[in-house]
Amino acid sequence: MAKHWTTSRTVSAFVMLIVILGGGAAAAQEAPPEATPEAAATVEVVTITQEECAAAAPNASAPFFIGLANAYFEDEDYTGAIRAYSCAIFGAAELPIVYANRGYAYFVQRADPEALADFNRAIELDGSLAAPYNYRGMLYTVQGNFGLALGDFTVAVTLDPNYAEAYNNRAVVHAAEGNFDLALFDIESALLIAPDDPAPYATRSAVYGALALREAAEYRARAGEAALFPGGSPAEVVAALRTDAEFGSFGTWLTLLVRGG
Image 1: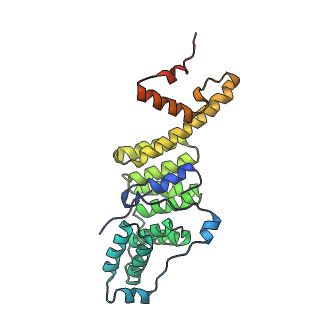
Image 2: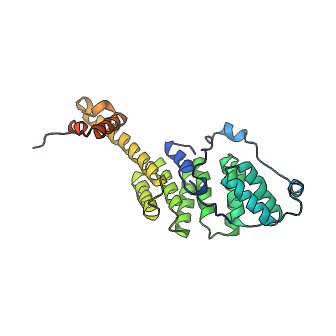
Image 3: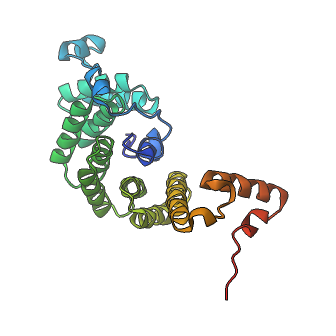
């Protein structure tokens, strides 16, 4: 059976990373819409009845529906996945992976109450599995419940110290709260585990960008009219450095030289 545990929406620019950069089968999924009351109010929750399941596949067993649901999940057909996982549950498939995967499908479709209920059920069935905590932490992050999110991501990496995606996701929340040192520590932890995973590099680049903005603001506040910041903003400095690299120059750095003594 395929294992769909990994993946990484928005209160800040950092939180968007948690959806699009988490890794695993769902890494390339489209980011869900922002968590606004208006969006939540218009969500149409996918449902299916036990009778509809029986009519769709007479005499089919729960493993059949799980396999079908996993195929839908891989194809990012989350409506199909929800229906097939629901049919498996009707067939007494009380498995944590079924609830966790269906919860993630609900999460992508912004059906937050249904997603939370499934994540809670997965944890109730097997509290030793790290992935449902990671998924639930993602949901809490999108909702702006950073304290709960950090708690879940911490449980996830405690249960599975090699869970690179959960480290990356916790880094996103630390960064969204402005705790950049903690974010960088978690990013380095993720990279030690999965150095080929692109997600932590993207997260770290966002952290560096935020640090550049913070440091530039501090510099301008301290230097006032004497500010020598080339181009006036970190974005323009980055553009200048990119041009320098293209032509083998280092001229942009020279504007930052200062006299000592």
